[in-house]
Each structure stands twice: as structure tokens, then as C-alpha cells.
Amino acid sequence: QVRLLESGGDSVQPGDSLRLSCTTSTNAKILDDAAWFRQRPGTQREQVASITGSGDTSYSDSVKDRFTISRDMSRRTLYLEMNNLKPDDTATYYCNALFRGAPFFQTWGQGTQVTVSS
Image (cartoon, rainbow, N blue to C red; front, side):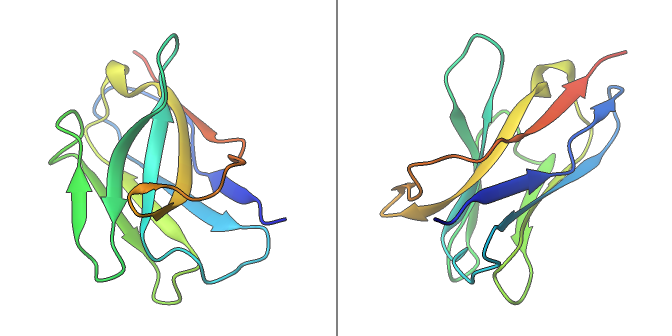
């Protein structure tokens, strides 16, 4: 069974930057249409950034112009560059492939924790 592996989370101060990475346990080339999600305390998981197989990206209003989603040429690693982090960005971040716009893998990874606090 393929597992999603997220990394790069940390505790930072407002205004700092982080880069999250996502790969799979099999290092498979499966991250064509893919997305980053986050779950803030007490809320449901939400999609914050997505990328299509052709490279088109989209972002939620809350992260637009601050976050950038990308992937490596092999399509085995997905990235989320996060700039000008705010306390509201505090969350556990997850990645997933997308199929017809919905998360593909039913089993989510452990996620990576991002904490933004002064």
C-alpha cells in the first residue's frame, strides 16, 4: 500500500518561510494532479493549493500570493513553499494526489505540523 510522506514542518515566527515536501513510500511517479491540504485545530481539512499534470496551479484565498505549490521533474516529490507565514497558518499539512478533483488516496499520511507563533 502506498503511503504519503509529508515533511518540512516546524515551529516558526510570523513572517518566516518554510518549504514542505511530499513523497510516497514507494517513490512512485504518481503526483500528477496533486494538492496540499491543511487541518487547523478544531476545523475540517481544507485544500489550500493544487497543481495539475500540465502545471496549472490554484490556491485558496487565504494563502494566495504567499504559498507556491510545485513538484520535481520526476513527479515523485511535491512541494509547498510558504512565505510570510501567519499564526492562522498553524495547522497539520497533508498532501494527496487528486483524481477528478478529489483526494485519490483514502489513507492520508501523518502530515507535517506547522506552528506559527511569536
